[in-house]
Image 1: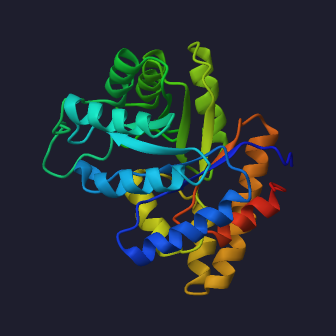
Image 2: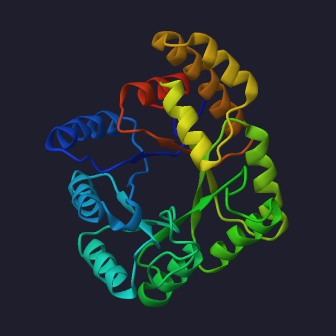
Length: 280
């Protein structure tokens, strides 16, 4: 595997000082693999807004570019200006723009001035030009609330047309879903890089709950094998390393432009995956 494979890692903002200290060490360990950037998630309704800001700026100051997530949920034009101006002043040049998960009981409303990620992209381009590299989300297995895969692909292309520079996918374990998505997008004339999102496997019950809620499919054969391991954590990790490293090899050897690891604020499993892929 090419040691220069472009990679990036996602973090979530820690809730405690202990968690922040741990993340600092994880960041330093993963920095040794020379990622292009780190990203930091954003809570629904802005519930972690200040933690996101502090985490982004603290990590960004350590030398590797760090990209905050910006969500439509609860965002007004004023709050967006505040955040973008603050990030710009600190030298942040990459933003991950998302609609975000709608809180229960809100119907189709985001509770803010922006309904879709494409609205955020258009707003940032209108007011900040090319000051930021804008990432958007992609769903190879279809967004769980999309009317159809074709409709979801058209919505993705619309985001790109509004000014997105590149995309990061929801995680998946079926490489064909990714290749099919990319092929359909390219057929519509959209050529922005679409980077696969990679979820390491360390805990089956947590992965199953998360996958069921976000619409990411765990193939039946994988579920059966993981269920068979029950609480055998070592076997789950070993199996997960094999499955995910093979997935990454397949993706890269068939043209994926890089890998974005959902780190879950963990170092070891992500470093092991990088070792398997000869990313140093």
